[in-house]
Length: 397
Ligand code: AMP
Ligand code: MG
Image (tube, rainbow, N blue to C red):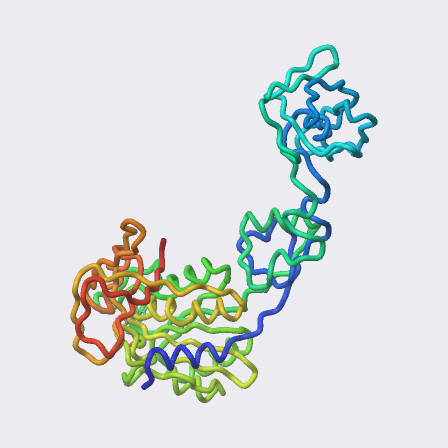
């Protein structure tokens, strides 16, 4: 048996190397960037008017001039004009290139234009006002986005602006979810009194889906030979497998033995935690990774959030800052195990307050609908006071 910290360390030493794929920009939102994005030009690429109005030479205003003959019009998208005479002005539109010879833009609200002459009514004009200078946001060739970034609409705009109709992202792993257990029947079946409908596989597929991973789902019986045959092919065909059930000490818990016989080397089996103590993790020489989660539904769910999700994100180079929350009410847990306490967090004046709602144990998956995540209470402590801060593993916002 290892601690949660040791299990985490072993899992994060066995990251997989994702493939890179090129996808159209329209599909980039939510994907993980796999290349460095640099500015192909200065941003903005030219001195740009930020207001509709007139462009003038500041010196003329400074020397007392208030009226300017309007001798040109510079719309957005037009090549730059040049001001021939410092006593003149060019009308400029937002997004237009600043005309040559001008250095200041006075907006329409501060002027009147009559018979081709603009009069400045504003009491003050600052040199260089209403201009967004070339390169002031980013210089050509400077790095704008780093690999490992989860692309959002803001980054999609950056990609478009630097001319990336296609972008390299990390491909999600080929993943398979397998539940086990002879007591479990399909969701469409009517269970006999001694049977239950299986739910873990569906929860795992959904959890993977929300990370952009499309996993297959199957169910296998508690039969060593069948497990051996089916898992052999699946380990071969996938980058990562997530199993549920069959990893405890029961007479029909064959999963660790079968995985071992298939060359999946055990890195973790049994962690000093509750729920989820029987957790198993291993990898094959060819880099195939297997998470075998205890079948109790809360254990399955917790182990996914605590171990599988960070492994997946770190494999893709995604840096996620650890979350913490403040225990809102005192809580006791005497066993020398790390306890993952179900909590509901509320943001109270900027502090994330975690209210315990322990539920009825690791089989009580219906309680998960009442909570927002797990608070990780360390094994060294048995009494946890209100106001103490602990790592928090959210599974919903
Ligand atoms: P196991 O880890 O196989 O010993 O299973 C522990 C408990 O979790 C048993 O009560 C199982 O019936 C239950 N269980 C295992 N797999 C599932 C599943 N896919 N859906 C719902 N309950 C499950
Ligand atoms: Mg079982």
